[in-house]
Length: 330
Image 1 (tube, rainbow, N blue to C red):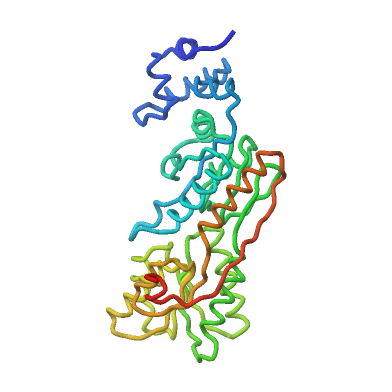
Image 2: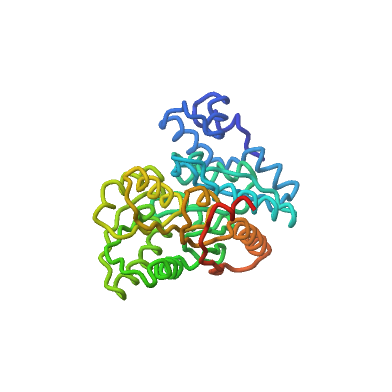
């Protein structure tokens, strides 16, 4: 005998509309009420209609592209958009249905709520971009094995999970070394990314390796991939430094604009190869990543996992370039 939403409401002692609000994650529901409804759902083994219909029709391959865009607040960040374009184009090619979910949409959910949220939309696979150590519930969601998952720029390989990334430590080491080649710069301001970010830690490791090899005096400050934060840190510390190396192009732009306002010259190095760098006014060394191709590869890898493949660690190539204005308008 199937369990209905009416049965859940009766078991929890609430109205049917309240159960619906909990299932659809309405914000104006108390934690006590959520607890009653979720307990009733678990006890009765209730499956929402959206899941039941998906199971009965044996629909497969629906994927969520989960993006972190709320932490890049100073300007529109083109990286998430490149991921979206690459993922959608490849999903269409392989016949996969894909939706976009932002971190902010699930940030306040506990584990069970997050599982039900994705299951209610018939999601079978996840592509998560920008996972950090602070995203505990998302990490738990990946590790539970209920969904096939591909992590972009975060570690994690299991039977149901793959990760895809460049060698961030090597790339940071290489671009910083090329940037400093033949120069006498020794006092470096290094603007790192996000605290507890996997990518940020790897890039910092690469910078530390170069500093040890070349005897550099490196002052590390966390810029949170923010143009504004980089600007403030540059104005505070750049006067006593020889050069600035940034863990992202967005921070490099903030640093460059601050130097112009301070009316001093310090060379600046970036990371990521975003087209916005071309409008910064100066050529800058940076690391070029093909974000559309990375997202497309993530879709292909998720498709392979859904067909029974095991998880793997995929390292994609990067290039060292110097971006200038003519590069982005040609």
